[in-house]
Length: 186
Image 1 (cartoon, one colour):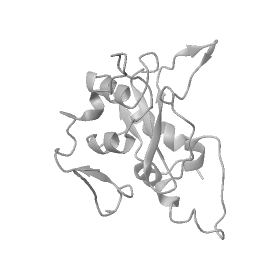
Image 2 (tube, helix red, strand yellow):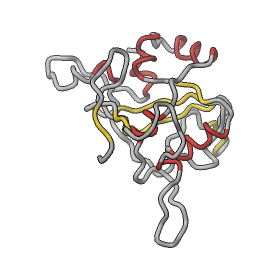
Image 3 (tube, one colour):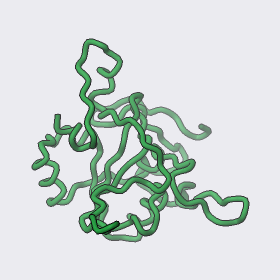
Image 4 (spheres, one colour):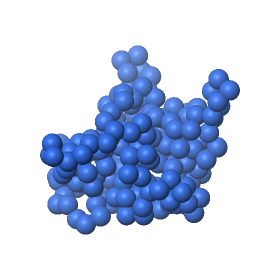
């Protein structure tokens, strides 16, 4: 991890933030993830293989939620503090948002904006994947695809940042839910 160091945990930030010492915070310019790797046949790789989710999320400017997304989270029983700790954010219609989603491994057919971007955390506090919830989902086999996961991404365990210290304690109750929002609403 040349050029990167761990930033101490600050209140409201995710654990183990990776910081690229050679870039300015919030800058998407000159970031490696915006230029996906090339396969031996000369074509660009598409999908989640080799995606550094942590670096991509840390390079994004501070996120905000649109009013409809904030209302959706509240109506789902997710407290503002829990949403802020998770790092939910709205991606609006822009070339920058499309580039970010492409770099996260979403295929062109999956990218529909605006969308709610949802980071997925490992039990150790690293962002290991993500999902989007487009406002206008695509239709597949006659049904809307409410949540999109990066193309070729593997399923991963998600542990909310506020629960990471408790996960190793066998005395703490463990709740398993099907979706991230359902877990965040507990």
